[in-house]
Length: 171
Image 1: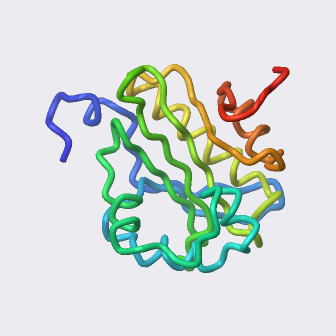
Image 2: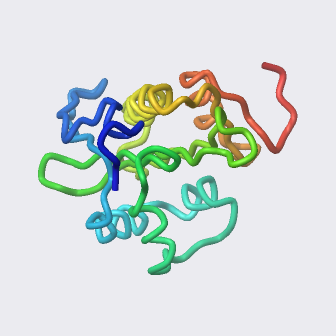
């Protein structure tokens, strides 16, 4: 866990915030914890095949116990994850970064929003909040590995002032 006086303790740790999205719907956003494994699995199950492909760049039917542990048991400094849930507790989105071991001021970002909640501004909201946390952790640049047809990821990276990897880009 966080050490008193360490980077995590000094960061903007917010237990839970209710946010109103562009369409007026509300979500609760907070840091992901190990007890969220079932929520993450439920959110994954709500993703279309296409959304799963865009997130993992491979066909994926389910998350293993080890993957769920990796996705939820984060240190909130080198690996941060924040999630969004409906006010009645259904997981609808998650954003994370994992710091590069080679370039400590750089991190790979991934944002996933379940299909029914896409195009409401949730990915943008999660990305903005994650970028703020990353700056507090000394991360200055995001990278993302995405599929060529994932225009939403390119837009989110622009929001976070990141850069795409894995394909040619004009910007």
